[in-house]
Length: 207
Image (tube, rainbow, N blue to C red; front, side, top):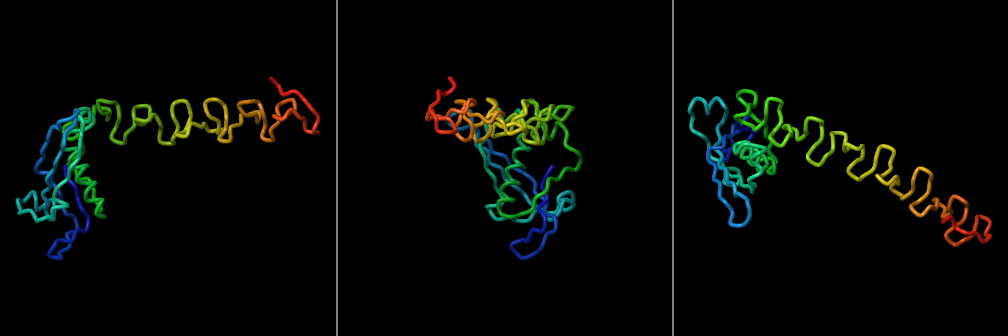
């Protein structure tokens, strides 16, 4: 496992088409408060995967690209291995500086590189894309943005109504709000909130 950085220019001005990054040191520090761990990762860079395999000396990196840090909880390790977190953190650091970074696997990922069962799901039941076996993410939404009951993240279904049957303007399928008035302010018997009908005559609102 490693990372490939495309078109990296060294401090001497040389262009490296595919710089190979390898995490070579991991420090794990327990925080004083809570079940958190401060993680620090060191990176070694080679001009190519072939150079690394051939034992060619690594090239130097500026400090801001040679290290990555993050904070993890004990429960995080049910989702991923330490190396999985390490490469993810390193990738974020390089991408934040504008580099194009790709994952590199000498062979397809296995349970020794990621914590997934034979079906491709972690101990918590999510695959590498973040979805469970039914296609829902940790927030309970599928790729189309619907939850199991057919509501989107704003709480509306495909017809535009919330769980109480009202649209974004507060009206139900009959065009009435929660107090029984339509968009013009009249109830189903044509009586307004001011106790006047559409002709201006006194009326009694529907209870």
